[in-house]
Image 1 (cartoon, rainbow, N blue to C red):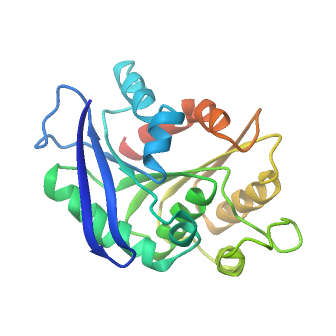
Image 2 (image 1 turned 90 degrees about the horizontal axis):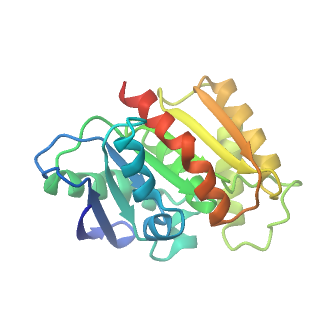
Length: 235
């Protein structure tokens, strides 16, 4: 796999570091779908994201893709339903990636925990940007359900979740794939978010797997969910 390190300067949240990974045997001029991963380096190291996609493509379970691994920076401030982060990804990072490697169609975005919330929020603010989202154990906090009131951005997160729940229709045709561990505290709010997204008209699937709110569970639930999502949105 070929890796290219980029620093995207002067975004609304400051500089954003990106590691762009392209499949072996491909060129930057080759037209390939793009997967964008929040917490990208950890997704690669702890969940085996890049390796899984490479092996799935070799086995014919999904197309070959480029992967943009986003370095989180000041994670809580960026990922907690921050419109500046959403604008940084769509208006700065995606064009910067497109300048150094050709990509095909709309990207798929992947996130876990607060990163899943950030992925959904980025779609919500920029509905045209993504063909699919993989939301793993999203921090879709609900007042009266989740005991996370001490979180510094609690109001911003719950305000966004409330906005989605009060919406009347989908924002575009983005396909939603959610996964969550059977033994984690976010299961109730993930089930509720899946119901909301389906009611709004999104094509939505929630997969509940054994495990907790951790990287081993997210690694296990990547397969077959992400290859299936890529097949769905690139077919």
